[in-house]
Each structure stands twice: as structure tokens, then as C-alpha cells.
Image 1 (cartoon, one colour):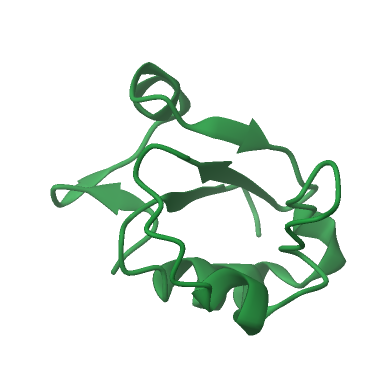
Image 2 (spheres, rainbow, N blue to C red):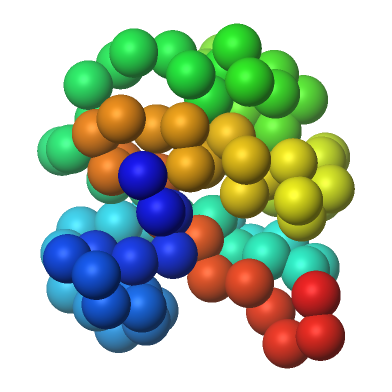
Length: 90
């Protein structure tokens, strides 16, 4: 799944917030998560537990991984609960 799109269209912050996603800010990438969509498959925590750690607050810290690795993990999310917006130049 392409974590930068919904229904084939590039996501925007406004679109994601309107759809109930919560924003986790990083230097090179912002990660968005929707608890209402999440199927709790666990690809995120298995994919990079430094970025995605359920018992921590905040549970997502984008800068604990590289932008490329964050995107790889987000794209492995089968439910679409994780999305991202890559920041300019990254």
C-alpha cells in the first residue's frame, strides 16, 4: 500500500486530519496514524520498534529511523492506518 496516497490521490495534512489521523512530526517526514482504521497486524512495531513502540508516549517517533525506512514500514501497513507526508528536499 502506498502510504502517501488515499484512493490514488496524494494525501494532504488537511485530508488526513479531517479523516481522523493524528500527526507525529519528524524532521524529514511526518507520520499520520488512524486508530479507527488500524487492524493491529503489527507490521509497524515489527518493522521498526525504534520508531513504532506501543508502550511509549508518543508511540511514534519518526526521527528514530531514516525517512526511507519509515516509508518502507508505513507502506507495509495493510489497513492504511499509517500515512506519511515527506518534507521538501527529503
